Amino acid sequence: MDFTLSTEQEILRESVRSFAEKEIKPVAREMDKKEEFSYETMQKMAELGLFGIFVSEKYGGQGMDYQSYIIATEEIARVDGSHAATVAAENSLGIGPLYYFGNEEQKQKYLPKLCRGEALWGFGLTEANAGSDAVAARTTATLDGNEWVINGSKIFITNASTDISAGSTVLCRTGTRDDGRVELSCIIVEAGTPGYTTRVMHDKMMWRGSNTSELYFEDCRVPKENLLGPRGNGFYQMMQTLDGGRLSIAAMGLGGAQGCFDMALKYSNEREQFGRPISKFQVNAFKLADMALDIETARLLLYKACWLRDNDKPFSKVAAMAKLHCSEVMYRCANHAVQLHGGYGLMQEYDIERFYRDQKLLEIGEGTSEVQRIVIARHIGAL
Image 1 (cartoon, rainbow, N blue to C red):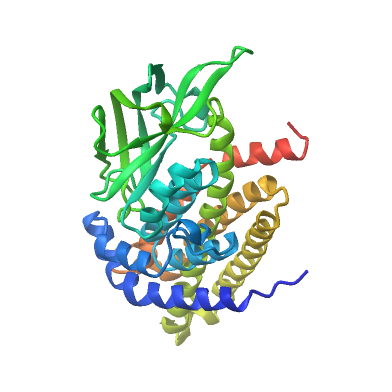
Image 2 (image 1 turned 120 degrees about the vertical axis):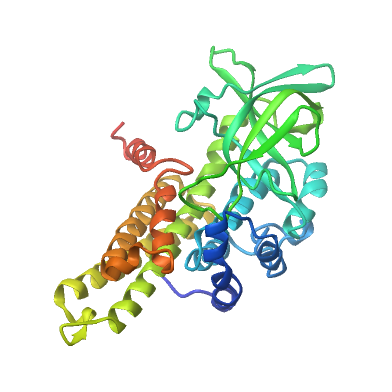
């Protein structure tokens, strides 16, 4: 196997890394402290081409492969989880469903402005009583003449309530299938539609600089043409979207783990106790060695999943493995890094404190670690 990245991918990595260090790192701590979404850095990320990376140039995208998108997400996450969340959610959950399942009219209408970063888009999947069990969603859409009438609510939706959020793709119950199971469909709901309201969620432990929303639908009417793909295809679209989203979360875990390692190595080489840098003590050197090993295996697994996806090969199992492994690798790296920082690692003036908090979402969002193990177990024939 050839593990060499293309020249374009190497250039992308270096440019995104440089951008993250110069533009995001100086403001990340303040955005986290104030729990503010940064429109300025979001626009700069758009100008760099970080939205619609894998979308065809026909619709305003960059026309790159999925691994390039993952590399870009990894490099943003190396510096800050909140900005990485904005990029990852906008690409995989916001743009992705419209690009892969939308008709030509829908693509032409929404994708160019999303790829330019002029607007953000949410993916309304999770509900208060339907998290891991997404099929238990209670939000309904009833066809009344030429309109869908939507009632219900969603929670923990990224990018859906900013000043430039243009709408959300919403998973709804649209009926009952012939086999008695619930029929699920995805419907496009634009911001400003009567009966559709959003609310920013505050007091988060993690990703405090990203936008997290609650969505409410009260007799919200949208044209029947807002159906995304065929009626009843919502579950399939959801699963396909989450497969790609798992790679995004894995990239955030990998990038975050690399950031933890970089901080831990730098600090332990500078911090002296008993007359020498603490990295020279075997107990600490072994922590760093374990972190380096974990990061290397995580990168290999994630890049393999991307290779499978880019070559149109089955990748669901490996995507679940990558999401699970990278999330847990960041947990271990963040834990070791805080330990190496000692008391300073508990203070907000050190970035590792933010990384330690941000990590937890990776084991929960877009399929918990427990759900990933279920997915893997089914793929290997154990369940």
